[in-house]
Structures are given as C-alpha cells and as structure tokens.
Length: 155
Image 1 (cartoon, one colour):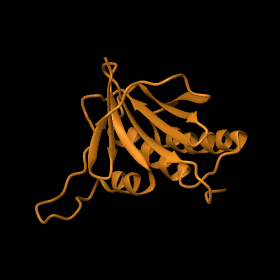
Image 2 (cartoon, helix red, strand yellow):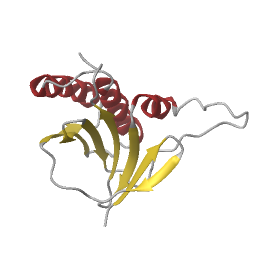
Image 3 (cartoon, one colour):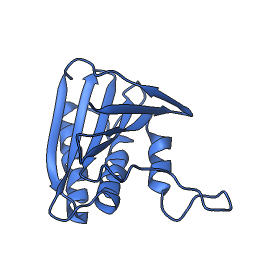
Image 4 (cartoon, helix red, strand yellow):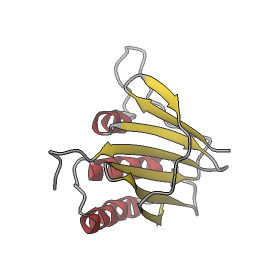
C-alpha cells in the first residue's frame, strides 16, 4: 500500500486517494540533465495546451526533476514526470524515481544553517502550496508539489 504524506507549513497529514483526475499527463524521461531539461520543456507545452499558468509550476518541475536526476538516479532507469489537475483549482506535479530508499530531507549543518545541498526543497516549500512524498511501489518514490490555481496567477 502506498503511503502518502502531505507537508503544509509545519504539519504532516495523511491523505486518502480520491477520484480520478480530470486532466493527466505522464511521461518517462532519462535520468540525465537532458531528461530534466526535457521535463521543463514538456511541462511548458502541456500547461500551455491546458491554458494553465506557468508560474510557479515550471520552477517546481525544474527543481523536482533536477532532484530526481541528482539524488534519485539509478543507472539504466528513468524517472517519470506527471502533471495532474485533480480539480479546476489545483495543479499537482509528480516526479517518480527508482530510489525509494533515499527519501528527500532537508539537512541543516551543525551551525543551524542550510547545508550546501538541500536548497531545492527549500524552494519547493516556498513555491508550492503543499508538497510531500509517496513511498512505493518498491523501489520507487514520488515527490509531489501542488499549486493552487487561484486568481492572480498567470503566464
């Protein structure tokens, strides 16, 4: 069974799986810098075709894809980009890799300041309205971020 965890500000909440989304896009990509770049390009075209805003969604796609390539890469395996609109007011960005044994964490160094790596998740936390990690199916994990598509956002 998949575990789904949501992080909103400082709280952690378990979610139940809901009904099928109205819009869904999913594509496997090579776990390389070229694959991460292609994720951003494909997301741009998909958001354009759906008439959805680019900001901050493309930044989130870029960060999550870069993390999958840097931290979730297994030689010979790809990562998967998913864009889902479960309701007219929400865009969910999902990046699945095959390193379920390496869950994302933000690590502080001994002085209490951010470590050299880990800044991408700080950015995700600031830009996304919600983000989290789903473990499974083995050996995978999915890091996701949701953006509320309220008034005032546009491309």
